[in-house]
Image 1: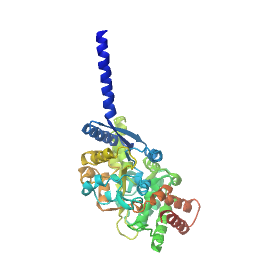
Image 2: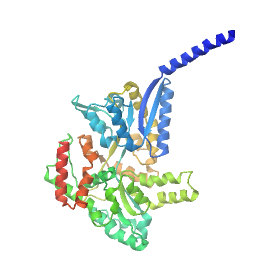
Image 3: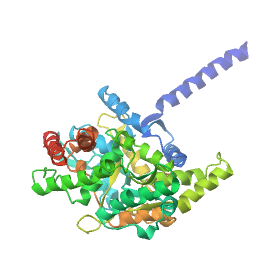
Image 4: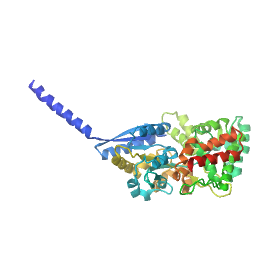
Length: 458
């Protein structure tokens, strides 16, 4: 009884001490998009563990969500006044970052980014220097993690079966698209006996691929919708003419029957699926996820040896990653880059520690494994990351490297946040639909698009 009388108070004291330690432990809430590949998530987990090891009294509470859930969940948390401390999603840049900065919902993280600004490649960190309408000034309101641009993917073996060599592919604009539609498609159908399509043209209103691809066609026509200060330029007759050219060329494969009829309702994965199924010979995609899927498969221990070997052949021999042809005026394409952004919220409960975490994550030894874990799907935002041999290790990644090395331009929403609204609406795909489904003349559909742009973004 005496022993028991002594033990109980000791245990109680230990329990209170443990409770006190638990209460003293800081909590940092992080919401992060679920990775496309396991290696991405593993790199994130490793960085978090290193941060916790460095800060023994901090517990990072990580929640991961699919990309389609990130914005609805974050908006709901903001509306309820309880946002996470740090948040990142692959689609924040396209849809919400600029608007959140404008509305004063984001924390100024200039103290984090300014000391490291010289580490970033051109047209990366600049895209996070955003306008806040409450302070009436610009600052760094987001942190750049990685970036993406537009690529062409085609099946070399399907091209060969149709009787063509890669050297037969034209490098000039009109001839390039005609080649896949008017030459490759009929030859492929004749030789294979299958209803293959020359081009996979993303056109769905619910697809970011459709607007990213269309805006690349717009760039081919040298269309600039805003100036550097965000002022609209759509009243310029040359802008209207360029948009007419871009919409005409973008919808032409559909009107000529050179893209699957379902492509008007494709969501983002669907052009990948059509390509993998060899329904299409060629498609354009805003990452090299199409090729990287086979790289992932060829190293996937859960697949059979035959499946892994087939995947290896697809990645190393049968699929080509390439850039776009020359513009209609004969000049070389300059690609628009989408810099993926994370944020710290103004109403976050632990902003000081959140800034420490972001600074830690942005160190090369933490950021590089995360970016490279995507197998080339995303390109680095730092000079050191871009210079690594990883980007020259195979033809797919080298093609991405060369496209970025030639220089890039940012999206309109980095200069005028209201273009995030236009992207959410997908005014670009809606204009395609007006031409294809409603049989509206291209010039009239473009005039409607311009009016919508003026209504939203002026």
